[in-house]
Structure formats: C-alpha cells, structure tokens
Amino acid sequence: MDNYHWWWEETRRLRIENNKRAPLLIWITQSVPLDNEAGQTVLKKYLALFSVIFEKIIVLMPGADGASNGSPDWISWVSVEPDGRKKKNLFAKMWAGFRIQLAVCRVLQKYDLKNVKILFFLAHIFPIPHLYAKMRGAITMFTFVGDVSLIASTKYSGIKGHFLSSILAILQKLHLWLSSYILIEHPIMVQTFAKILDKHAPKLVEMRNVVYVDLFHKKLPIEKREFDLCFVGRLSVEKGVPQLLDAFENYNKTTAKKITMLVVGSGNLDNFVRNRIKNIPNVSLKSWAGYNDMPAIFNSSKILIMPSISEGLPNAVLEALACGTPVIATYVGGMPGVVIPDKTGWLLKESSSASIENGLREAFSCSNEVLEKFSEYSARFISERYSFEASSAQLRKNLIVRGII
Image (tube, rainbow, N blue to C red):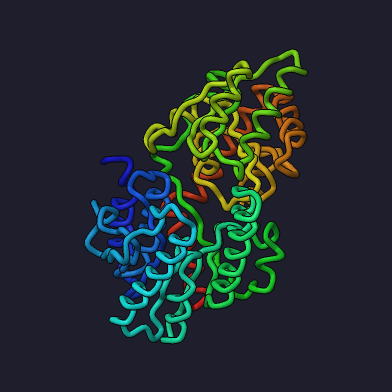
C-alpha cells in the first residue's frame, strides 16, 4: 500500500466493521494546493476519520478538481469559484474571497439543509456560507486549531499586519458564535485559548488528529541517532525560527558539549535561514521532505523542537513522538496535552530566545538513558491514543455524546 494514501484503506476497514453511519456531511474548506503536501495530508486524514462516521461526504472547495484524485466513492468533490490565493493584491484577494463565498452559497442552495451537518474545516474565510447555512437550519461545526489573528499579526508587520489581524479576529468570532459545535484538537486548548473559548465551552468537542503508527514508529534507540535536535515545519516567524537559531547558537557558544541540529522545511524565511546558518556551526538544512521521508528524519534525531508563537497540535509533534523522539515545545495550543514534562518532553514558557535556550539546557542535561525512557513512553503514548482506530473511535463517541449523530 502507498503509505501516502494509507488513510483510505484504514477507512474502508472500519466502515465495514462499523456499518451504522450518519447519512451526510457537507464539508466546506478553503483551497489546498496540490503542491502543499502537508495541507493535503491534514485534509485527507480528517476526511478519512469522518468517513468512518458518515455514509457520504460532499466537499466544497475552491480548485477541488485535482484534490479528488484517489478519493473513495463515498466522497464527492465540488469545485467552486477559482482559488483567490493566486491574486497578488490584498483587495483582489478579498474580492475573490467574497465571490467564492457566494459560489458556495449557490451550491448549498441545491440541498435541503434542515438538520444537515456542515463542517467548516480550516475555513475562517467563509462567514457568509456559515450564516446562510444557519438560516437554512443546518447544524454547523467549525474547526478551531489556533488563533489565526495572532498568526497574522506575527507574520505581517505594520498596517498590513494590524489590518489582517483585525479582520481575521472578527471572522473568527463570527464563526465561533454561529457554530452549533466547535471542534478542537485537544481539551487542553480550553486553557491555552481561554480568552477565546471560555464563553463557548458548551459547544466544544474534541477531534483528535491521527498518526499512521505503522509508518511512524520507533526504529532507533536514542544513543544511535545522528542529530541531537531537529526542527520540522514552515520556516516562518510564527514558528519561532529566528529565536531558535539565536538560542541554538548561544547554547553552543556557552557549553562545553556542543549539539547538532537538523532544520527541515521551507517558507518565507528560506533566504534568512540559509544566510543565518552560514555563521552557525553544527546546523544542517534540508528542504521540505515528503510524507514518507519523515519517519527516517524523526528517527535520526534525539529531540524535536517546536518553539511556535501560536499553534494548534502539529502533525510533526505527534509523528515525532510516535517515532520515540521527545519534544521541546512552547506552552501553546494543544502542545501541553501531548508534551508532558518528565514523560514526553519539555514545555517552554514562551517563544523567546532565552526561553528556548533554557529549554535546550534542561533537555540536554539529561543522559541518553533518561532520554531513552522519554522515547519509549512517547512512542507508546501516541500508539495508544492517536492510531487511526483510537482517534476514529474517540471522535464517534464524542459526536454521539453531544447528539451530533
């Protein structure tokens, strides 16, 4: 089986074992370009999870034609207005986004939406279809995976950053208010996003991510791993990349035992990172790796670091833990739910260089024997809680308990 499409095989198996399914789910999401492998993976893994619970899923997405390749017959893809992300001008993007929303509403007109379940999946830019669906009597669900307004203010500076952050904050509040239910990746997010989620507590439903544990599992003991540290993710400001490089450099300058780091990823800080690491010994850079390459990368590193400023619960963290790679991460999003001090990793108070450096000192003060205990617990923890079977069973249970299905 092609590992990249493992989720459809898992879904088929569980659909046979669990033949009692809700009839229909309409899935609305923003465009995920085919060259965005990470985005495609997240989209299709969650589609697979919901496919165990719903008989049929209709996906409404800009540019959905290509995304439908390889999908099973119970998923129908409807391509709406062309993707507005290709527009270079901000206001052109906004106008394209408005037209896409109207196109989604036109598609929704074809269905009797009374009590139909509609999921807005990573779809902050669709408030008009959300309002329209509610007016037609639909039961709507919205995925909350982090504060998008904070990410925008971090990613963009000046007036543009303030404008985008303000708009996204309004859209986020509107979606949360309209939603019948809000899906979160871990219950700990109620605490890490208390200011946003507290008032919506009765609507919250846990929607666990899933890890392909047949592919992502421990292959090497800690002492035989090539790199001491690795970072996997977008090379961007919101991921804490500049602070990480500063902390790593200062750590090695002020300690007798030097550590090595592998940086894997790409993003708008590509040139910055390439130029920066020219002056930092012991750092290796690898462009974005494919899904099937990631287990080897995690198994080559003793520790993964994820010093994000804002986050949900990244695939990289779960997959690294599944490979027995403990994690250093900031106390944001769903991270504290899986990065457990003295068991699976170390939590940083913030994404500053000083905080990251302190985290490095704490982690690398541990012997290989201690790290090996972390490693064994991490792999077992993910296997028991985040396998496809465990995650789909948990999602089904949560939807039944809340009366959604």
